[in-house]
Amino acid sequence: MSAVAEPCVSVVMPVYNEEATIARAVQRVRAQPSVRELLIVDDGSRDRTGEILAGLAAEDPRIRLFRHEANQGKGAAVRTGFAHAASPIVLVQDADLEYDPTEYPTLIAPILEGDADVVYGSRFIGSNAHRVLFFWHYVANRLLTTISNMFTNLNLTDMETCSKVFRIEVLRRVHLEEPRFGFDPEITAKVAQLRARIYEVAVSYRGRTYEEGKKISWRDGISVLRCILKYNLFRRTPKPRP
Image (tube, rainbow, N blue to C red):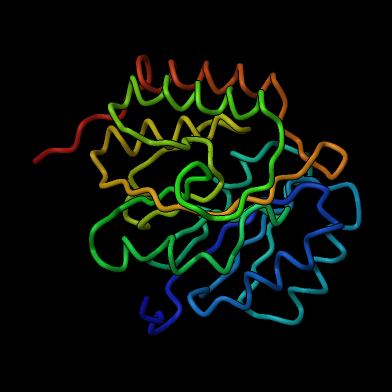
């Protein structure tokens, strides 16, 4: 794959109590040639995350820090980052290193080649490395992705992946509302209703255990199902004009 000629990506990184991994995550993102800016949203962290981020931001003018005084959720943090993004391509990156920043060239290639408006990095296709964890999480993820596909008429394999990439023009046409993990079914429903060109590519996945800091719970799964119904049946985005 050809190298990116110049930085063209805004990376949005929601962060909550990630003092163990945040420095390594930021360094790996900074090392990617395609990154023009890294927008980090500290969603009310109560550990040393904010202190570490302040030191990192002082080293690199590409890092822009935002802070929520109280924890609001991943969706709210991503929304704050999206509002300040200025690059043609916007990519979501978690701070826990479950997803590998070295795979950015693969993620953004369909957009750079003019084929896609949105790209999802799927953990369930391809031969990339995956840590083996949580059978029932896998079952729930596939079930929720299938239900989402039934309403959107997409054939996604991983609706809840963190690795989501957007042309900024698409994001500017989407009004996001969900504060927590409902962000994933909401944005999926809304880009589908805009008839955006959506691609999937394979990504690796190094999942964490709850002891290592994983935060999603079964309650979030119930909320995801609620959001699938809400944004596909009751809060639909108007169809674009031809």
